[in-house]
Every structure is written in structure tokens, then in C-alpha cells.
Image 1 (cartoon, one colour):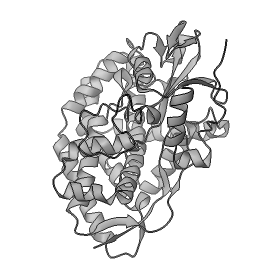
Image 2 (spheres, helix red, strand yellow; image 1 turned 180 degrees about the vertical axis):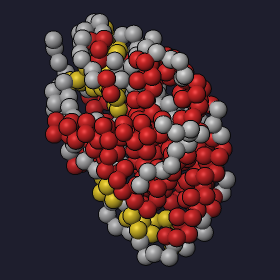
Image 3 (cartoon, helix red, strand yellow; image 1 turned 90 degrees about the vertical axis):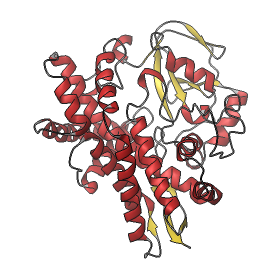
Length: 388
């Protein structure tokens, strides 16, 4: 099979982690579809190619069992299943999500952020990640599910191990710690299932009574994935959003002058989103972006590259808080898009709204450091300060 190779792309290279967008722009121009030997995958950098893959779940499988692989039972959830197995589980969770009061989620995030900013305003500097991003994220996802928030310190370690294991194809040493962390998180989920929960979890449990055991296993795994994925994605998104507003102070002024939170938050996620991409398996020979793929080939849709494709977004390097329409891929697309997208957006609106209401402005207080992760784009430390 002829292979178009782009050896310059190392997702874990410090320069790429710091700012991948110039490289994505160059790859999109020179080799928009290329083979990455380290990931043993075709990588897609154009928006149209990524959407084609995400829409066509019959040709491009998420469920590796369809390609003959063995998948451990705990790994089968709404995010790893394909229709028709996925369909009833996804509908169950989406219906439960629609029954939640998203305005309350936004209000809750606004109030918590406001309180945190009031506390932090007296400090000369602080780290955004543990002081704002992590507490707001764990409160948001706990409130959505209707469970008591776990201790951030202990849960953050579990979440970090699971998040790092998403890069096991690039760094195999992360696989086993991730497996151990998933076992620990499953025990936490089981404890929730043994009580009469409110919120989304309560709706899911009540509406799945009498379901077959296999589908109940999918549901249990999806609760784990939703809690962990919601926490890690919102944590990463908050860090990226606040970093963007610190480096673009005119953006915060626009919010203070009435720029709509809905379009503004959408643009912040497009501009520097938390999830860098996702993988699929070609189930039959096919063409994508002019490149012939064979059955069994792995494909990685690079969301971060697609969200800066000038064929889809006018002046993609410009932060435009009024950008509309804005069909970015920050939370995926189609049947495997993040089921908590609307709740995550509500949380971010509450956060940004509280920051816009605060009398002081947020600015950098030292060098920010990104985590050395490829799938998730987030900060390890983000020093900041509040001043008039």
C-alpha cells in the first residue's frame, strides 16, 4: 500500500504540545491525509474529511470488535459501541440529559466561579487548574449526575491515569495505570448505583429497569465514561478558555460589553478545544481525501486541525466571539459526539459569565505548562492573577 508519510508530526513533541496549529496548517496544505507510523494510522487534517469519517459509522467503525479485535467488557460503553448496539444506550442517556435543568447547571457554575474568584482576588497569584478548573468541573459533572462530588485530590489522580492511557498507542506505559484507575472508578460508580440518586443518574437507573444484563453493563460503563470524560474534558476546556482570554484580553471586554455567551463559548472551544482527535477503523476499502484506504486501516480524525481549516472557517486563526455559524468538532460529531456537550457548554457559559461580571481582570502570572498528552489538550499549570 503506498503511504504518504509526514515524519515531522510527533503529537508528544514539546513544540507541538505548546502550539500544534502552525504544523496542522502546514500538513493540511502539503499532506492533508498522511500515514503516521507511530500511531499506525492515517491522519486527517481537513474538516470535510473528518466529518465524512465521523458521519459514516458503517464504513468507519468505533467498535473494534467489528474488525475482529477483542475488547474487554469494561471498555464497552456508549463511546466505544456502534449502532445498533449503541442506539438504545445513547437514547437512554440523551433523554435523561434533556430532562435536566441546564439553566441550573449554568447558574451553579456561575455562582461557584464567582465565589472562587472572590476568594482568589486577595492572592497575589494562583494556579487556574487546581483553584478554578478542577473544582468547577467536578462540581458540574457531579451536579449533572446527581451524586456527591468525590474528593478532588484522589479523583484527580484516577482521572489523570485514565486520560493518559488514551495515548497508550504512543506511550504503552500508560495502559496499565489506566486500567487500574478504571477499576477504581468503576467501584465508585457501583456505590452510586446502590443509592437512590437524583439528576441524570437517577433518570438513567429508573428508565433502564428490566433491561438485558448486557445493556445494563453498557450503561454502567457509560456512567463511568461520562463522569470521567466530563470531568477531564471540562477541566481541560476551562484551562484553555481562560488561557485564551488571558492572551486575548479584548475577548473578555467583548463579553463585558454584551457579546453573547453562547456564540462566544462555541468560538473559544473551536479556537483551542480540549479534545485533539478520535480514531476509527475502515471496514472496507474506501477513499478519503483522495487517498485509498484498505480494510482494517486505522484513521485518526484530528479535530484540532479540522477546527482551523480555512475551507470551513473564515480566518480560523482569528478569535471571533461572534462567529456564526460555527459547526466545530470540539466535542466530536455524529453518533459518537460527547453526550454531555450541552451540559459542558452550560458550565462554560456560567464560568465565563462570572469572569465577565467580576470587577478585576484575569492575566498571566508566569509561564504556563501544558501536560504531555496527545489526545487531550490541557494545562498542567496555568499561573494567573486578578487585578483591576
